[in-house]
Amino acid sequence: MATTVQDIMTSPNFEEHFSEKANGTAECVKYKVPVKGLVKGAPQPDASSGMKPLSHEADVPTNIDLDDFSNMLSLPPEDDTGCHEYKRKLVSPTPERFQELVSQMKYRLVEGQGEALYEIGVEDDGEVRGLSPEDLQKSLTTLSNMAKELKAVATTITERRGTLGTAATVLIRQLPYDAGHLEIRIATVGNVDSGKSTLLGVLTKGVLDNGRGAARLNVFRHKHEVDSGRTSSISQQVLGFSSSGEIVNYAPGNEFHNRSMGDIVADSSKVLAFFDLAGHERYLKTTLFGLTGHVPDYTMLAVDSNRGGVIGMTREHLGIALALKVPVFVVVTKIDICSEHVLEQTTTALFKLLKRPGVKKLPFVIRTPEDVMTCVHSISSGSIVPIFLASCVSGASMDLVRLFLNHVPARKEWAMSYQDPARLHIDDSFTVQGVGTVVTGTLLAGTLSAGGQMLLGPDNLGQFKEVQVKSVRNKRVVVKSSHAGQTVAVALKSKHPRDTLKRRDVRKGMVLVDRSLNPAATFFFEAEVLILVHPTTMRVGYTPVIHSVTVRQAARIENIEEQDVLRTGDRAKVTFQFLYRPEFLTVGSHLVFREGRTKGIGTITNILSELRPRKPTRSSQDV
Ligand SMILES: Nc1nc2c(ncn2[C@@H]2O[C@H](COP(=O)(O)OP(=O)(O)OP(=O)(O)O)[C@@H](O)[C@H]2O)c(=O)[nH]1
Image (cartoon, rainbow, N blue to C red; front, top):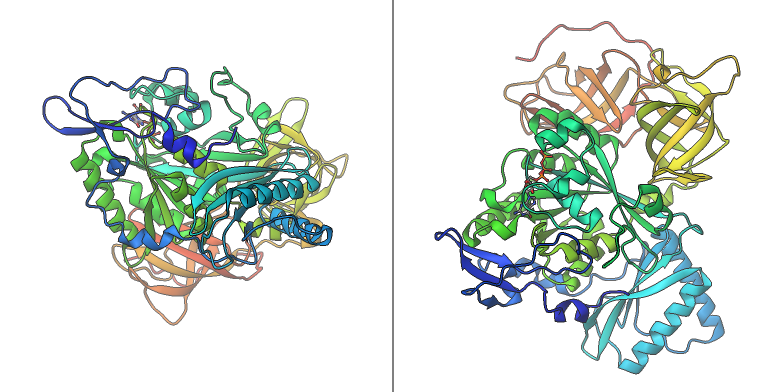
């Protein structure tokens, strides 16, 4: 059953706050658990004497300036593109009008890759007017009938009060199998011990944490990670939602906690794929690779509320996500053990960082389901950063995080590239017994089908090889085809029977592309770069490691246009030469380089298609 605003707001457990003396010293804010769907192992809040309920508003430290967000409470005007549609009312349309409405819904579903949000009772300019109960009911019935025509389901998710009555937000989602599923990839970043793995454990297993690392055990991949409690590799977790918006991983009162990834995906209309990236500086290269190579749709930044500031790798991770133009949302964790004063310091530092001139984001603290829906409408623009004040132990705000994940929209550009030639960027390769060579990666354009003939490369000489796609799997489920925006595992064989394809023929950074793309590799490319930090000056000859999608290789600066040196804050058009082998690049791709304290970002502007390295022109060094 779908959750409405009233359900949540009238829940006896919803965000009641209690204050108590912690360890006889600091004043603590303790949150009761909104326990929906969080059953097994959920510690019950301690309602010992001396606790007194606070209002829901106390969720946010009182000194946080919310003026900036007041205008966010009305909806932004309707956009002709995208998957959000506003309708004043849908009462008894004529058959012709009904067919028009169905066509329009089809368009919105295509834009949203199988899902759309309808705002009923809302004007095109975003004004929430609302409807009488009868008109709202009739409009919802019409909407439901429209959805049925398209083999989709309409579910009311929130209601808001307008000037003339009640307005409703309705999710239209296609059923699994007909349209495959919508996949949204989320990179999970944050400083070491900020609670990333725990957050994923709680979200995907439906079991609360005990504050001593119980929930993260579900997401660790290697034994040494379990032993040290520290993530070192990129592990993937999925959270599936059904067409009516229910979580597929688990259900309240049911023991679904150990459902396999394949089962979850097969039953889902929408799949959130999380990449848990390491927080420790030692693993920054892996984290960088996760952020560039896995092409996330969103970044979830975990910030430990107890640190009283934004510390360690948090800035670094946020900076990279913003440089790659990936929208960010923040989960401030561990508020169950955080004093009000420290929480205030942490959020203030976070706000300051997000509002800095170079960042210019609008932080928006999420306190209600309506706030979630407001953010869902605006998040794709990248200008707003939703912030959840949460706890994996008490469960505070976890329902709001789930609601947000359920409705967070797909990136528009994926749907727009379905018809383009297929292009898969390879991030890993395996030898699977009985299957042969399997590559994994993200499809950045087109549709990839089993049986298709493709080109794989470039090899060290910049050549591409003809291969055949034996099978395609998406999250361990065999599929006939997969489309842009999805992560897939593809079994390959060489097109020529005498030439076997070995795993050693494949490396990270290669691509699998449609033959019509006529791909070419290059040693040289031009990029517009911005130097974020460099301790001294950078000249021709400087050789950082370039990360662009799955390519990761040292490249030497060959030329800096109209400048001799680059310093912190400089922008310039730079020509790079890869050091070891030519790579396949695309114009418009983002790149990141980081070397010691040096950090730079950029966009590839020109591919010079040179297959031979040039001799270094000058042996100048970075001074
Ligand atoms: N009290 C409390 N403890 C939490 C919460 N979230 C996480 N923890 C604890 O914080 C510790 C660190 O959590 P992790 O999930 O391992 O942190 P991480 O960010 O994934 O760490 P790395 O993988 O090393 O980057 C564990 O002991 C968790 O039990 C929370 O909301 N409240």
